[in-house]
Amino acid sequence: IVLLGADVMDGQYGPAEPIMFLAWTDLMTAARKKVNLLGFSFNEHPDEKLRRAFDRLSPAVALKVRDQVSLERLQKFTSHQDIRLVADVAFGLPPDKGFAEYQGIFDWVNKERACGRTVLGLNVHAAYSFLKTDLQVDQWLSMMASVVEDVIKGQQVSFLLLPHDDRGDRSDSVCLKRIKQSVRADSAERVRG
Figure 1 (cartoon, rainbow, N blue to C red):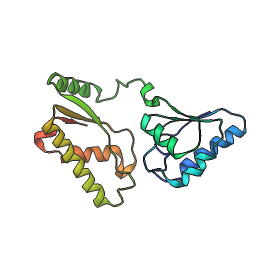
Figure 2: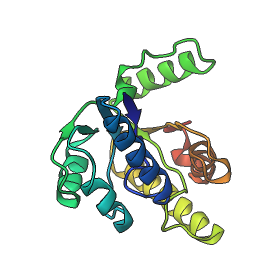
Figure 3: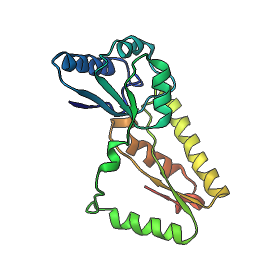
Figure 4: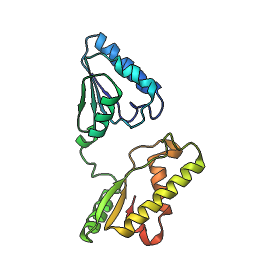
């Protein structure tokens, strides 16, 4: 059994979903199934309510995280032993060259590279727990636009804005669009999204 943990296993969006996933893995191991909780990251401030659930996982459950920092954080957080580093499953997906904007993005990236610029992918959303009010979201997105402008001014860098999901008002696509709209005109041609 493979269960995708994605970005919820540290409790960033609340403890209920990761606790449910961990309980489900225990049920499957009790039924003598081999279980892998696959491809998740783990932030530096996990929800403390999760510690006991991780510590009590069956030794038959393999926890597989997608980056070295998450591996180290999870090893410090729990006494569970079977924690491994794996590639993010998204890297195994073939590129979708058929989507409407593919050629335009491909051409823009090549143009930026021909100008000697490094193209950085940027993804943000406003579902972080530290952003409690709309005013905080507005201020944070304004600050992100300023950071993009400062990097463009000081470096041979351009930004490709890369949304990966849709969560309503605070989704990647909404936030990235607002950042792009906030970037001053003299930097705008080096931001694509």
